[in-house]
Image 1 (cartoon, rainbow, N blue to C red):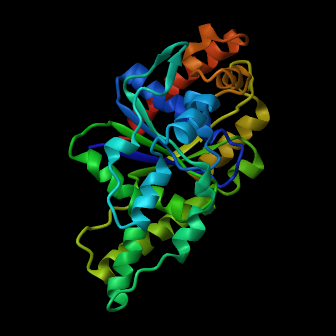
Image 2 (image 1 turned 45 degrees about the horizontal axis):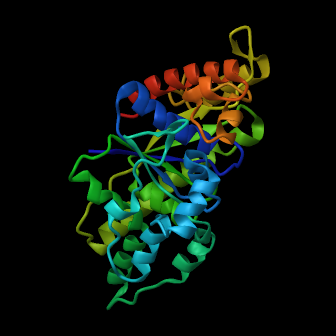
Image 3 (image 1 turned 135 degrees about the horizontal axis):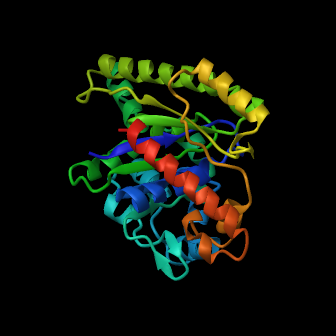
Length: 314
């Protein structure tokens, strides 16, 4: 069975997309896990980073490659999305001229920016409120229905969902389909102040979805999505550890969320941004035009993070 993990933070600029991509690649590279990445954000940043803007535009707009938009379009047309057509293989860059064979991706689409409004307006009439509640569950389960096609085949070890910075219906689809949610953050006040609120909302969603299932006498039982932890990104170091102000934030968050802060973190530096600019993973640091030393260091930190992720998210 695949382990499905949503990467969620309502604060932008915390490196959520970078963590999703590099961590997914790390799970494959160091632990031989087969990984599926899903880009749910209409900004398409995960798609851009994974294969490059030009390649993305060619796939989506010139070759009409299926994307996450195809999945939701199938819901509106009352047809079943075909996972084999939506999942794109051999696209995620590994080094110049090469792609990963066991890191696949579902691309996002910029037209998804209006999707939440369309989903909210879409209502199916039932013979009573109980049946209509069942229809509302189906609206939440669009992404899960896609992933259910993969579970029978045990095709992926991990599915990582890069969520938009909101709690709209697309993000709720990700949460509904997930076994865990993980909060990427940077060690500052604005990035961390909403973590407790995120946990509260997710717990509320768990209760709401369970009540909906019971009320509608739904054929499937809802399983809670568990809190997987907090991963810090863009950490400044001093003498081999987080600098004082960042260490104080670490300790504060550990006190607020005991047992849920990952010991390993990702440092700040331009290695990741340089890798992104040439559409390569941080692990291809020897092929970067500059910042090779910093990129090599960040690659080592991602390896340690992948090692810990395997233990925590299992």
